[in-house]
Length: 304
Image (cartoon, rainbow, N blue to C red; front, side, top):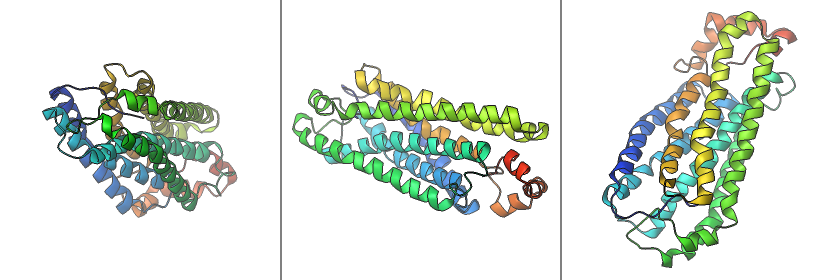
């Protein structure tokens, strides 16, 4: 998957928009990662997936300064290898973010729709194993792409970066379809998860549970679908056609690193509080008492 188009000279508009994403994304994800590690202690599957999602977003953000420089000046001061690795960070973020977001949706689905039958699956250990497998998949995908980019180095101008190259497009003919297929499969999973959770909330939850929990839960799933619709799907389709406006789709894709912190806020009750403060709150104590019976376990939405 190549993430660029031909450019001639500076493009200040893109320098500004990528710079804006960098200015917003860096503090948002750094603070979110600190809160997740400091206050939520990685004791739930959702927290594990969110930490890895924040790491993926931070890796994308640290690659943006060189994009800003390139589009502001129209020149690339570093080597072709540096350009390749920075491009890889973008592709890795699209893949890893879409997968981690989907795993968060699946975790919420299991917690709400099948709370008892999947309790043994929703463990921190299994979440970490899944996260490791996701990163392995992402890294393995880099190997053939890195070889193709290296072989096409002779066709590139050393003063440019993020350039669409006809030779490279021909070499990536097979791999270029993987990204759209992956994204559409993950989008389908998110749509099905959203439908099942919505049905469960309407059918089974008590009136008080609907008022207190349903809004946050549905916001999580709605945000996931919005991020796929705005950030992941357009750039995945655009990579197949390479229209002149493709660079705008790249910018839209980078917006996911600014939207993800909102997902953390709505996914974890009392996001700004320490875990022990959440557990000791009156509402949480009442929920803990309610989970004694199997009926309550089936109807109560876990806080993490």
